[in-house]
Image (tube, rainbow, N blue to C red; front, side):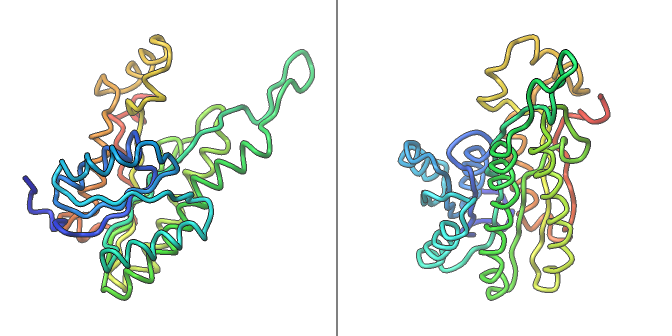
Length: 261
């Protein structure tokens, strides 16, 4: 049953919705009775996701969208507006990783470097994609008198991380863009905020060796890996009427990880 969040029948776009944090977010918004446009490049999960959204209590629409391509994003926004008439919430959740050291030095020489493609692809999806999606929805939000934008960064965007020059650059950039949008868009009653997850139990994380997971837990004061539902709750709260005076904020959902490192 939906709580009084003000999200019932609101139109929510969530990127990277086919799995992990995005899927958890899509289903959580559906529980609030929202209309959820689920964007992803994984069409194999489209039917299942749309059904799950509707079973959770919302209305679902799946769209194949490559957020790194502005034409793909613009077309998808037009389709959402044609179907449902508005865009109330954008959750910029889509992201990828291509980890490697900037320069790996061994035996007095360069053994490896972060490749241009690894850097560019992460920036294209994780940073440029957030820019594309937000730019596309803002005119609709201005016309309708307001909206909420929630973008996913990471604790590493705040404090850096070994082997993730590209990912950290993108996630730090998301924070900077969001703070700018909070200043620019507030007069239109558009709020822009960031969620910065810590170690969350997605498929990628849970496939890691047990010793690696144990080390992550050891550095997290609450003593556990986060659940995707923890992030979904943050998405919903920041998008809801309960956070109507919150904009330009970075909400760390990390079990105290930063304090524990």
